[in-house]
Image (cartoon, rainbow, N blue to C red; front, side, top):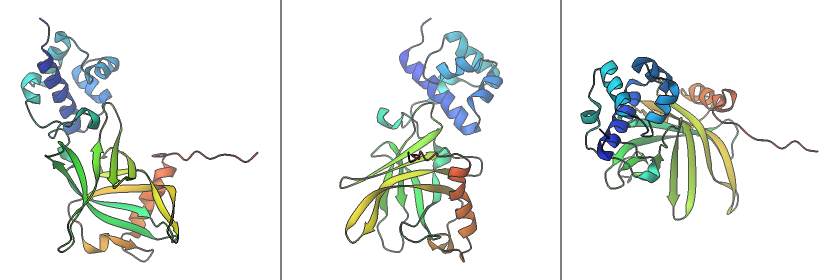
Length: 242
C-alpha cells in the first residue's frame, strides 16, 4: 500500500526528532535500525518504502506515524525543522567574538534561543538587561542533512550572517560571523571573524560584557575562539602573493 504524503512527512519528522533527541549520527542510527547508511540518507529526505519504516519501528520499538504528530514546523526556507526536534537548542547562551579594534579583548553577549510562534522558527535574541527591551539578533536556519546551523540578522538592510557547528555534547557551537566592522570615523568594512555560542544553565554577570585577559572567563572563551581555525570548524582561504 502506498504511504500517504501526510504520513510520509510525519515519519520523516519523527526520524529526525529521534536522531536529534538521542544526539546520534546517521551512522549510529543505521546501526540501531540495521539499515545501510545510504538508506538512512534517503530516509531523512522522505525517500523510503513501507518495508523500511516498518523495520525501523520494529528495531526501535516506536510508532513513527504517531510519533511525529502534528506540531509547529518551521517553513521551507528555514529547513522545515520542528519545534519538538529542536528543543535541545532552547536555552541561554554566551555569544563571544573578538573585538573589532583591540587585540586580546573579547566581547560576550547573553543570548536566548526561543521558539517564535509568529515566525514558526527558532529565534535568537539578546537577553534583556534591566528595563531594556530584548534585541532581535536573528532567525535560525537548519537545512536538512546539514551539520551546521545558520543565523541571519537583518536590521534595516544591514545583514549579519553566522554559520555555526551544531550543538555538541558540551553544549557548544563554533563558527564564523560575516558582518560590517567599524574601520574608523563613520567608515565600515566587511569582516569575517571566529565566533562561539556556548549554552549554560545560568548566565552570570562576569560571563558577559568586555572580557579581557584578567577576566575569569577569558581563558575559556579564547580557547574556544582559537579552536575555530585550529580544529577546522572554519577555514580561511588565503591568497598567496605571486
